[in-house]
Image (cartoon, rainbow, N blue to C red):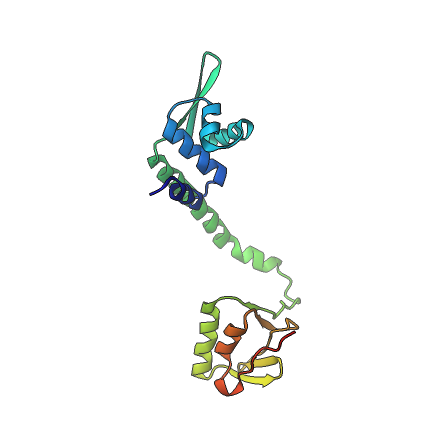
Amino acid sequence: MSRFELQLLLEKTGLTEKEAQTYLANLEIGTTIASAIAKRSRLNRCTTYCVLDKLTQKGLVNQFTENDIKYYTAENPIRLITVLEKQRSELNIQIALIKENLHRFDHMKNQNVKSPSIKTIDGYVEIQRIQKGLARGAYSIKSDGDTKILTTKDKIIFLSEKREFGIIIKDFELAQLLTPPDQLQEPRAT
């Protein structure tokens, strides 16, 4: 795996680009001063000091002072797992707190205000869900020029390429998936 691929991997775990560059540079060099890490990571020295402080706070870099000079050592990469497990644990606590208090949010919600019924269909999975509904007969489509009307037993939803109202399909090819072949129209040039 290349250095760049390792950097991307670190970024996927939650490090910023500069944190990943700095960690890898420190890991490659070993215990050293900030200016050497800055040179290797191709970041300026001031930025490197800030990034090293953040990595120290995250537990991925250790620092010590000897003869009034600060030295930095990247932690063993196994430490990344510990850091991620800690983040997961903290996230699970936050999720549990929200779940535990959802009813309190519901009590605060104004029951007299209707939520907007406009939704953007974005993505193939949502289109497939509607396609399956069409196949089951849960939806039917009627066409009126540029606007298509998708109906269910309790809703009328408008599909418009012009983004005028209702559910908006961003891509004409996705709109084609929803349209029965006998009603298919090519998009007009604007």
